[in-house]
Length: 341
Image (cartoon, rainbow, N blue to C red; front, side, top):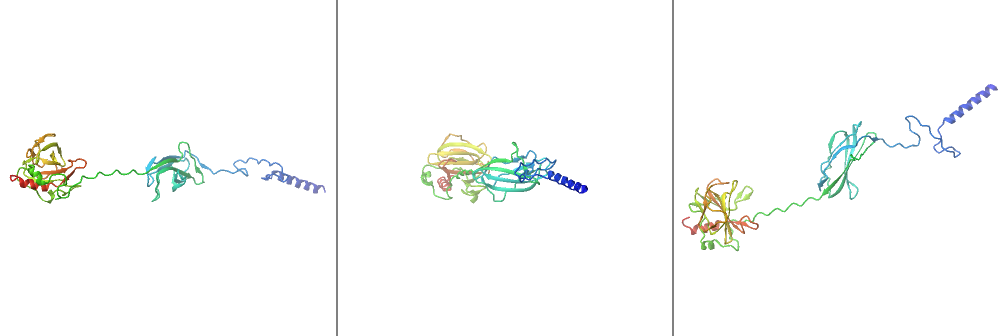
């Protein structure tokens, strides 16, 4: 009997030890007593405590370059680099968030990218931004789901202002040009009236009017011919058709060469171009009479043969509102009235 009693006492002791070592219920014991504190376990986790996901430790994005402002349309170029010690790749997402609606208008999932490398974001085709303010946001996580840590200096965020495109300035209208062979505009003398006023032909010597390429309105590289060429020998005198005042004399290497411009009192300005070098006989502000020598015919500037390039302007030479007209009707009338020409 003593042997049986020892066995029973031994079993009771083992049961008591097992109950003492068993963890307490998360809700306390059945009698409503206080919960026993769980013993700390080295390297372990206490029961009932939620552990947050690990975070990527490090300084966060080291660079995220994008202009502060841009014009409405496709998003501007964005480059970024993520530096995270001990992390080789991260899953990166870039979002453009409207600060007006607080919604993402464009999102780019870059996938797994290497750290310590610079990447340029490829925006989706057709993605556009309207004028307004936007937040550019970069988020990333590692293979354990750890989220990118942001710091005060590397937030992974930037503000982008999108402005409406500037209106293109209106192009200045080219000077009006009268059609080739058109009658004189209203308000200026007719060829016959200028002859009656004593007009003379501007080339005092043998001449001709050349071919179609010498006519008023003939095509040139990027513009049209604004005068009539009078082909003549080098050194032939060039004279004023009507009395007037010299507006200017100058030189243009790639165009008119040596030239003079005369203003008359009847509504015309005349230009005489390609004068022979050293032959200009008048100066700015000088009054001239009809038939007075101005220069000699040459081929200075952009010219391949001696000739006079003659222009007639209404409303002022190269002036706002001024425009050239076809001078051939006048030249022919002056030629007929000057048999010696």
